[in-house]
Image 1 (tube, rainbow over the protein chains, first blue to last red):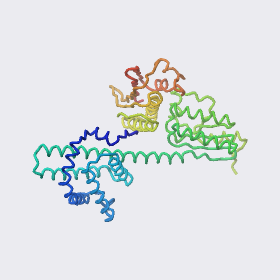
Image 2: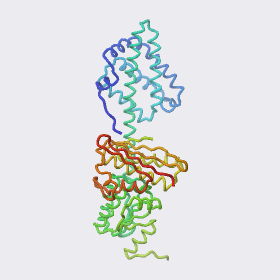
Image 3: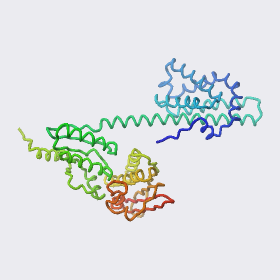
Length: 295
Length: 129
C-alpha cells in the first residue's frame, strides 16, 4: 500500500494546527514540564500492569532508557517546533516500535494515559474556561498528529517486512533440478504472478542451456489457481523452452484446475500435460529412450 | 467485503479472501476455485486497464440457493466495446483475451456497466452448484 507522505507544514494544515495552538501548548509547557517526571512514574506504574511489561521493559537499563526517551519526547511535544526534524523524530519512534514488535495498542493506550494526566493538570490551573479549552484542543491536535505519524511509520516498516519475506520466498521458489541427463524438473508451489513467472522463465532457460536438456517437467500440483494470466505465463514458458529445443511437460493438473481451464476456454494446444508427476516422468524417459526397470 | 486493488499482491489477497468467503457460505473446492478465478480475472483487468479499483463480494440468496455476488469497480478508461470484449481472444491488453468471456462461461450472471463518465462496474453472480 502506498502511503501519502506529508511534510511538517502539510501535517499542520491537515490537523489545522495554528500559531495559536502552538502558543497555547508552549504556554502550558512550564506548568506541565515540572510534572513530567511524576507522570513518567505514573506511566511506569500503569505499564507494570500490562502484559507487555515483562517482555519489553523488565530489564532496568532498558526501562531507564525508555523513561529518558519519554521525557525528551514530551519536552519536544511542548516545544511544539513542528518542522521536518520533528516529524522524522516521530517517525523513528514508530519504526522502533514496529521493529521490536511492540503493539500499536500499548503505544496508543500509553499516549492516552499521558493525555489524561495533562488534562488533569490543566484543569487544576485557575485559568478561565476559554483558555483551558484552547490548550486542551491544541494538545489534542498535536497528540493526534503525533499518533498518526507514528502509526503510519509503523505500518511502513511492517509493509517492508512483508516485502522482504516475499522476496525471500521468491528466491527459494524456483529450484530447477536435474532429474536425469537431459531431464529437468521444476515443482512450483503456491502462486504464480508475473514476477515469479519471469523468474521461472529465466531460471528454466538458463538451466536448459547449461544442461543441454531435452525435456523439462513443470509440476504445478502445488498451484491452486490457474486463471488466464497464469495460463498465459505457462504457455509462454512452454513456447520459449520449445524454441530452445526442449520439450516441456506440465504435470499435476488437479481436477478443479482442469475443469476451470476448459471453462475459461484456454487453448492448451500442443502442450503436453499430465495428471501427475509420475506420468510426466514416464513420457520424458520415453523421449530420452530410457526405461526404468525393476531389478 | 470490499478490497482495494492496486497491485498484483492485492489480487492474491482478494482471491484469498474470496476463497474464504466462498467456503464460509458453504461452497466446496470446485465452486471456490471458480470464485477465485472470477475474482482473479476481474482484479487483473482492473490493474491492466484502470490501474486501481475495488473488488467487492457479498452473499446472495433466493428461495432455493445461496451464491456470491462479485463486483469490480473502477474509474478507468471504460470498456470501449463491450460486445467485442466478451468475444474470445479479443484483447487490447496483450493477454489471452479470455478473461471476460471466461467469466461469462464460468458464472451464472454477468452484468457490465461501463462509461467514460462513471467508469466500469461489473457484477458477477455465481450460485452454489
